[in-house]
Structure formats: structure tokens, C-alpha cells
Length: 221
Ligand code: DX5
Ligand code: ZN
Image 1: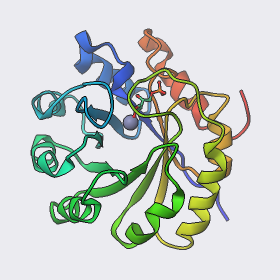
Image 2: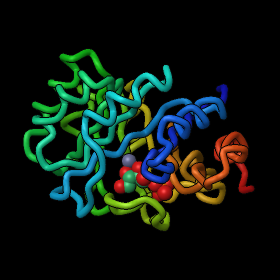
Image 3: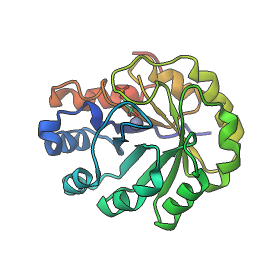
């Protein structure tokens, strides 16, 4: 069987927000596959980020898909505004009320449907939704902030999810603490989409292509 292509999705949370357009263009030129946009509401997680107006304004900077990760208590309020702002994939958390309604809303808008789970949430909670989703976003840190340490405890969960997916066409995406040391572990466990903020946005755009390419390697750097 051929090796799966590993997609890299830089998280804008670690970009220089004073030059967001330039940062997006730099990672796009450096080989990024998706742009990961973290949306936080100060309720589901103890942090705030950006809203649809900012997403709309950066939409013109690249043709790459926008992977919008909704860390919000009530995604139903925000799915349509982010779709209209240019989101291509939207991910909601399994821990919020009304999950199936949110997944259906995303699907009806013709966008890729993602479902995420936090580190303390069991893989089994995903089971009822498997026929409704395109990807599962496994949080490998507690959601809320960039630059945290990877939680090794999530590796068995990624394997369990891969097993649970079986032959369904569902991709596994991982988010949090992904760097050249942890990337091979999550790839080995079954992830094919890697989100990374800190290890890509190091402040020097000349390094971005290297920072991205090294995450795709199967062996520890
Ligand atoms: C955390 C966010 C992540 C985060 C990843 O809640 O969902 O996308 O920005 O950043 P790093 O790669 O720095 O852990
Ligand atoms: Zn994220």
C-alpha cells in the first residue's frame, strides 16, 4: 500500500497578527496544504481569537482551503457567518450540545465536516457521528492556546480512532504540540493532516518551507 500524503495545516494562532496577509502568503508559498484558523469564544476555552470579519479579509490572500476550528460553546451561531466569510472546512467539538445539528448545518452548506475531541474526551463519543463527517480533529493539547506541550497520552487514542474508522473515508487530523519530534509519532498512529503553529511560524519566513517539510518526515529529525 502506498504511503498516504501528509497534509500540513499551519495554525494562524502563532503567526504575526500585524502581518497576517504576508504570513499566510509565506506559508502558502512554503508548501502548506490548508490554513488552520482557530476560533475561540472565551466560553468553550479561556481565550478569544478572531471572528468572521477577519476571516473574510484574509480570504483573498490565498487559494488554499481555510480549515476553521470552532472552539466555541454554540457553533450553530457561527457556522453560516464563517461559511460566508470563506471557510472550506469547519470543525466543531463533540463536547458541545447539539453536535448532529451542527454537522448537518456544515454539510448542507457544502463544506467539509470535521469533529474534534479534547484530550479528556473518550474516542467512543465520536461513534454516533461517523457517517456524518469527513475528518476527526484529535486535540493533542488542551484547547485554548498555542505553544503547549504535546500530550503523549493521545497516541493510543489516535490508534483507537483509526481502528474505529475502519474503511470509512474519514481523515485523522491532529492539533497541538506537533513538531519534528512528535510528528512521526502521530503519523505512525494514523494521522494524515497535521496542524502546527509554533513549529512553523518561527518568525523567519525564510525557514517556513523547511519547517513544513520536516513535519512530513516519517522518522525523527
Ligand atoms: C489550540 C489550537 C491549535 C494551536 C496549535 O487550541 O487549536 O491549533 O494553535 O498550536 P501549536 O502547534 O503551537 O501547539
Ligand atoms: Zn486548532
